Structure formats: structure tokens, C-alpha cells
Length: 397
Ligand code: NAD
Ligand code: MG
Image (cartoon, rainbow, N blue to C red; front, side):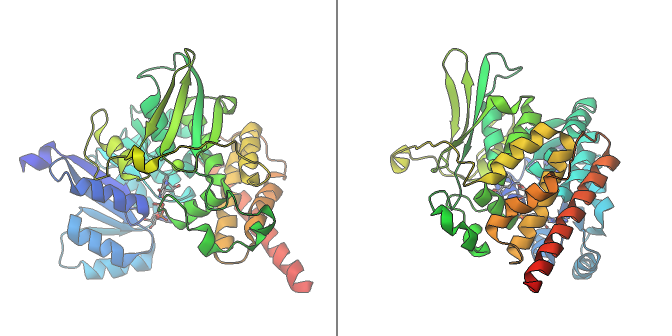
């Protein structure tokens, strides 16, 4: 019992995903330091059931109602409360017995529970970058106003966090945000339209969920990360240099006015930033192998190519246009990636769809949650309309 009193209670939003599974993996190395209060997922009952049996959380949330019924039936003899619906995600993010919330739902669906965790003053371990792209000011204000703590889990932002001064930004001249360049960095640019979902999700260095893998292939992931860095570190995009670094050994760097450049290096394994988020300001064994520099042997750097990666350009442009444009960027990208994964959209049409939505003169910045959700939904409708028109014109051709 003593152990439970001293150990930190954790809610994992998106526990069945890549980040969720890696979080449980790190926690399993430190059974006295952390315990699970709540696990959440969308549809995957089998995986959730296995996690419930292993971790015995107080609550298990399946957003999908039918999935929740199935889980509830399977757990009828266990002392685990099964909940469903979006409200339940917010509920388990605010519980008094929860110290840390791992925000690892993919996409806009993470926004409301992340915000709930911030408002409840939790330590938020933020993997879900999309919510920050949608609601940067609102989310950062909610954190500050409620004395919540934010630990970036995205590997680049975690690296930057480690390389920045302990307080303030004294002497910082630039953030060097590294990017692997994804699987198509060197592919003949004239063949990009033939890329299949299977090819796009096969990332050379990282094992990740499908959506972020496609985002890495288009480099929209880096575009979202530039915006993420602006909010997290209160910095403007002109002070962020994207650096293609194919080995993914340096996870990002910070340049200082005395000529120093601080970098964080490590094997490409999300358990390192997750362990840092859990243990900060201390350190914790993450289970990740030590970096072997002789095996890495070399570190290469290239400038990003906006012609090959138009999504990166679109992200910079959206940030310049304001908060509503970044909501539209994210919404249109989520629709485009889903359509691409269903083979309803070509790889090279992902940026075409996003640009078409961004061209609908989106200005201003919504600072209220209702306005943010309306902009998100309008942009999704515009993206769906574009897709429908496109398939109608192809059917008629
Ligand atoms: P994933 O697809 O593997 O997992 C997503 C999780 O979210 C699952 O548990 C799923 O059940 C849940 N989910 C999906 N849709 C939902 C919905 N509508 N409502 C509630 N829950 C829903 O994704 P991932 O790779 O683990 O990525 C999660 C987040 O972390 C993303 O925002 C991603 O950008 C970010 N991230 C991931 C990595 C990585 O290495 N995987 C690295 C950096 C940042
Ligand atoms: Mg990243």
C-alpha cells in the first residue's frame, strides 16, 4: 500500500496506440513509481482488454459505445469501471487521483481531454501535437492559469526542452528542428504520385501510428512540429530552422549567441522522451539501448526542399495567416490523410486538397473552444466537399 501512496497515478489517453504502448512499457520497468488510473482507446477492444488484465486500471474508456459494451462484458468479473463517449475522456483526465496525463490520442480528438487535463492542473505529457496546432493560445493559457506542467513528448520538442536554459531563453538565437525526411527524401520526384499507403507508412527510422507516418512522408509532420514549437517555446517561425538529418540520431538542437550549439542525441525510440517526461526533473531507465556512435558512424544534414514537400510550406503559410488557418490546415490534413489511406486520394493530392481549403480566405484566430471546434468542423466539411467534387469529376471523365 505504501508504494501506491508514493507512486504517481497516470491516465493514458490513447493507451492502445504506439505512444500508449511505449508508455506502459517504460512504466513496467518501474512498478513502484507509477500506477495506471485510467486507460482510453477508440475501438480496439482486444488490445484494451489485454491492457486492463495486465494493469488493472480503475477506469477503462472506449470512446465507441459498442466497443465499450463488448469490453464491459469481457470485464464483468473485474473491478474495472468501463465508460464510453468523449465526455469520459475528459472525466478521466481530471480525476483527483491522477497526477500525470499522457496525451497520446491521435488528431483533433485529443483536444478536449488535453484541455481538461491542463485545467485540472495535471502534469501533461504531450504527444498529441494536433491539439496544440488547433488551440495553441487557449491550451498554453489553460496550463499557466492552472499551474499545470507541460512536458513535450514529441522527440524533437523533448530534445529542445532538454537543450534550452532551465528558465527563460537567455542567449538563444535559433532552434534547429531536425527531420528524417521520411521514406521519399531521395525518390524521383516525378514518381511521387504513385506512392501507396503501404509505402508511405513504412518509415525508415521510427515505428509509429499510420497517421503520423503519412505526415512524416509528406513532411506535414514537420510543419505541425514547427507550429508546435512556436507555442511550446514562445518563439516565432523565423527562429526555427528545419534541418533534414536522415539518421534521426540528433533529435533537435538549440543555437546560442556565444556560438554554442546544444544537441540531444539518442537511438530513435520514443521510450526516451517518455521516460524523461515521467521522471523530470530526474532521469529514469527507459529500456532504450545506449547510443553506439561507431555504429551510427556519420551524421548528415540537408536543407528541406519545399517543392518535394509542399506540406511544409503550407504549414508556414498557415501559421502566418493566424490560428484559424492552422485549425484548417490540421483539419484538411486529417481528412486528406484518411482519404489517402483508404486509397481515395493520391499522395501528391494531399497538399492540393489542403491548399484548396486554406484558400477559402480563412483569417483571424479563435480563442474560445466553441469557435475552435466550429472552425475545425467547417474546414472538415470543405475538405470533404473538395473530395466529393474530385471523385464526381473523375467518375464523369
Ligand atoms: P496511434 O494511431 O498508434 O494511436 C492512436 C491512439 O488514439 C489509439 O489508442 C486510438 O485508440 C486512439 N484514438 C484514435 N482515434 C480516437 C478518437 N477519435 N477518440 C479517442 N481516441 C482515439 O498513434 P500514435 O503513433 O501513438 O500517435 C499518437 C499521437 O502522438 C499523435 O498525435 C502523434 O502525432 C503523436 N506522436 C507520436 C509519435 C510516435 O512515435 N508514434 C511521435 C511523436 C508524436
Ligand atoms: Mg516528432
